[in-house]
Image (cartoon, rainbow, N blue to C red):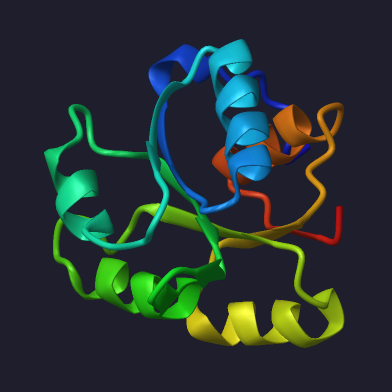
Length: 140
């Protein structure tokens, strides 16, 4: 069954793009707890450059939709336009209205949606499912 595969998180790297310090702290703690190599960016600016510089390149990017001076949608367009990053999993993480944003995120090409507040108990399972190829479009 999809999503039940055990994932060795230590073999994955992630980039979190989040301007809210509380959200960043939760994502960062959870990624470290799971053993993922993780990087953080708080503005959305230079995300493509940062992701290209990561060694190894990120397997998954957690992308807030509301960022200073840009949007997660604009950052996603830049990621998808980059030849070396276009296939990286990108998951929207937002507190915005899920009824509005989930269809918009699907249409934009996101690989998943996790609504805020992030559930510390569900987050590892959500990421396991996404990395196993199962779509996750959840409000919390």
